[in-house]
Length: 298
Image (cartoon, rainbow, N blue to C red; front, side):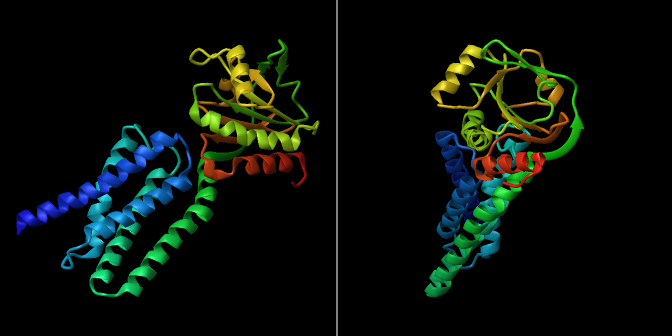
C-alpha cells in the first residue's frame, strides 16, 4: 500500500514536471515574451494533468492538485532563485496560481466524470477555462505594466548621443520636448520584439515638434552604429536612431536591455520601463504617457 502511494505521488510530480517542460519548450521555440500566452498554456497543461492523474476516487482532489502543482512549482522556484529562468515580472506567482488552481479543476472534473456527473464536469471545465482566459486578458496586462514601469520625477546629469549622420545631440538640445529613449542591442531578442511597438507610438508623434523618439544603441558586445543602422533597416523601422558613445545609459540609470526612459520638457526622467512583455500594450502606454507629459490627452 505504501509503495503504491509513493508511486502515485511520484507520477503526480512527474505530471507537473512534464507540464512545466512543455511550457519551457514553447518559450524556447517561440522566443516570445508574452505572459498572457504563458498563463493560458500553463492553465491548459495543468488542467489536463489534473484530469489524467485523478483517476483514483479515494484521493482528495485538492491534495492531488497540490502534488501535481509542486512538480512544476519546485523547479520554477529553483530556476528563479538561481536566475536561470522566470526572472522577470511576476511569472512565478502566476505560474503557482495557475498550476494549482487548474490542476485542482482538472482533478475535480475527473471525479465528477467518474461519478457520472457529466454536467458538473463540463461546468467545472467551462468556469475554470473562462476564469483563466479572463485573468490572462484583463489582469495580466495591467499587472505587467505595473511590474515593469516606474513613474518617477528625477533630474539627470547632462548626457549626449550620437546620430548616424555624425551629429551629436545633447540633453540641453532636448529641453522643452518630451523625449522617449529606447535602449536596445542587436543581440537582444526582447529588444527586437519591443521596437515595433515603439514604432507605433512614434508614428503617432512623428510630426509633433514637442516629442522626440530615439532607439538608442551602444558599443555593447560588439555593436556599432553601422551594425545597428543596418539591423534597424532590416526590421523596416522608421524610429530615429542614436548611439550612446558617451555613457548616457549610466546617467539615466539603465542596467539592462531593453530599457525605456521617458523625460519631460524639463529634462527630468518621468518614466522608467524595464524589460518587455508582449501582453502589456506598450505602444498604448507610451502614447498615453507622452500625451500626458505634453499636457494633452490622446
